[in-house]
Structure formats: C-alpha cells, structure tokens
Image (cartoon, rainbow, N blue to C red):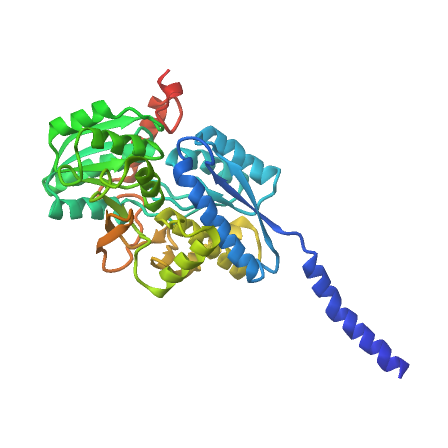
Length: 420
C-alpha cells in the first residue's frame, strides 16, 4: 500500500511540476516602436492599438510557445534617429524577441541598420517604395506593384491622363513619384508638376495654387502624417473639391479621414480616393468579426485601416512562425516566415519565400459621406510582391536612394537639419 501511495505521489509531482514551471515561465518581451508624438502620431497611434490587440488575442489563447507576450511600447517621436536609438534600447536593454513598428521609410531605414547589426527582427506593416529586402525584416505592407502601379493604371482609365505629384520630402515619396513618372511615360500620360514639403509642413497654399495652375486630371498624394490635414484644408480654401480636382492618396486611411473630417467637415473629403489593400467596409465574415471585436475593445468610434490590419496580421504570423520554428530566435523565425499565411480581413496574406514581403490584393476606394471608403475596384487575386520594379536594373533604384541620402546630409528625409 505504501509503495502504491509513493508511486502515486511521484506521478502527481511529475504532472504538477512542469505545469507550475510553465506558469512561472518569464513572459516573451516584444517591442512596439511607433510615433506617439510628433507629426506621424495621427497615423501611428492607431497602429499601436492594432498591434496590442493582436498580442491580447494571442495571450488569451495561451501565448507563444506556452509563454505570455509582454509588449514594451516606446515612442519614435516622428524622428528617424530616435527610432534607431529606441530600437537599439529595445534589443539590448529590454531583450525583446522582435520589434513591431515604424511608419515612414526614413524611420525604417534607420531601424534596418540596427536590426541587421544586432541580428534581430523587425515586422514592418506599412506600404512603402520597395527597393529593399532585408534578412532581418518581414514586410506586411504593399510595395509599388501592389499599390502605386495599379492606382496609376486605374486613374488613367477613369480620371484622366495628366497627373500632379505632391509628397512629403523623404525617401518614400521621392522614389514612389519617380516610379509614377516612369509609368506615365510608358502609358502616354503627362506629369504637370511635382512638389515636396518637409514632414510636418502646414503651409500648402502656394502648392495648391501651382496645382490649380497646371490643371491636372488628378493629384497623386504621397504626403504623410498631419500634413494631409493642412493639404486638404488648402484645397478646400481654394475651392478645389473632388468633383473639380480628385486626389488619390497612398498614405491616408479611415483614421486619418476621421481626424480630418472632425476639423474640416465632410465636403473637404467626400469623393477623393485612396489606393490600399484593405478598407473597413470590405464584405466577408472575417472582416465583420474583426471590426466588431475591435470596436468592442476600443469603442464604437474606432476605425480599422490597412496599416492596422497589416500590423495585426504581422503579430499573428510572427507567433505562427515562432511556433513552427519552436524557438524565439529571430533568425530561425525569419526563415519560418517563408511558410506562413493566414486568411485575414482583407483576404489571404502570404509571405513570399523569396523576399519576405506579403502577397497583397490591390484596391481603390472613394471617401463617402460617412468618412468611410466605398470599394470601386480590386485586383482579381493577391499580387506577388516585387520590391524592385522589374523594368529597370536594381542598380538604378539603389543609386537613386544613395543620391538622395547623400544630398540630404546622410539622412533619409529632407529635413530642416539636412537643408542646413
């Protein structure tokens, strides 16, 4: 009898001890690196919410590799060098397993150097200019052949054959607009002019006067952050509503529209367009369920956007990759990402095994009276990512980037400091 009791106690201890150890496993630290202050906060703060929302979902389901995820949220403050220093702190001091973050390409390029040097991993959720593929970055946003190229072709078919280009003066708008000018030449369209203003610029009256004088069929807008508010306010002051001069934006979505409507009213925005991979109004059970759950968590006035959905998917795909790899090692997870896919609210997301970018569906939406987007067009299926436009040699794009970097004083944006 004593022997049976002893054996039973040993078996019970053998079951209890691993469970107790599992409960006391330290959490997995992950970094969230976005702008909570500065000109980019209008766009990046909602992405923080979406990232945290995904982490909460994973934790409710048991965490990753049996461990709870703990987010360390830091502020990039809309300043690329600060993004780099914060990334370094997250990796060295906080010992995070991965960083979710960045918006502007100027901030991403600064962080890219850090994660490559530190052998860490960045999950980047924003559409961007391409011309990059890093062994230490997974890109869940769109590249030009999934966003800009389809938008230019759609505009030619539906709005006219002359374009004006306006953008923030940093690497994404400069490279994106070089691509648009190439496409215009290939397709027999005309670029009537282009203007670039520093991130955070608020005076667009002269720019809008130049646009009006050049009489384009459509404006392609690569402004970022709260400069969009100033730009659409200037259009409104000069009477350039969407029926007179339509704008297709590449970096505004539902949250920016919501903020701008609160300041400018409906008339300044109704009828303008956005090129994106996701709109909150898309049909489908997955999207309806996510929109409902997000509203329950953040309030009925909350909105979901393409960058938010890409950030949400990036967290879930990272957890899947970590589970498949059986480790939190960034290099192993980066390799495991090549096998990851999920059915998201905007359709299937699949990480390409050649370049670490996501296959994405291209879409065009138009702002309606409710401040949401009516879907006008979408690609028949997800588009394979081509970070380097195939019609020109890689060296052309890389040389262009290096020239801008040198011209701006070894920075990725043409800021006041680089001008001085």
